[in-house]
Image 1 (tube, one colour):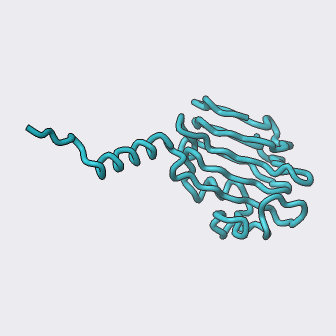
Image 2 (image 1 turned 120 degrees about the horizontal axis):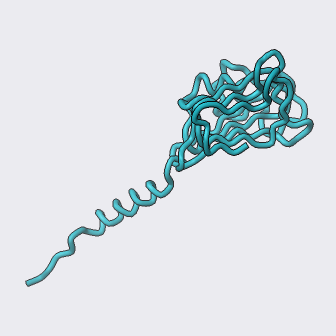
Image 3 (image 1 turned 90 degrees about the horizontal axis):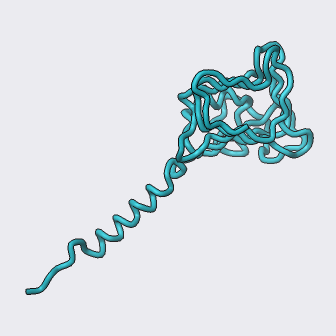
Length: 162
């Protein structure tokens, strides 16, 4: 009696591919977004001035505000938002609909060129407000303004890296 293998070579490759994709976790479909203010000086990534009607998916189509990326895109594990050199007069509000997971953080990275990226929350209670969101990483920003707090975490705002 000849025994046949339980799976053929084609099936084995398919199973291996599925396992590799699963191990990559949430980063498999991660997206990079770009934000640039209205001045071209000391830019690290973007090649044009930002505009909130842009898609933010490339260095030549950046959004003008961080909040517009959050409001118009559904951010998830592994997504990265690159914020170019300049001053952004806004309060950035991130909620549980735009957070990461154990598979990957949603990362907001500021330019380190020129004067860097400054979030000026003047006239707002905070510069950054993380409400009921987890696995959010905020790195290299200069934070100013905010009448009460620079960065405010409320509700279930755990596993964040600032």
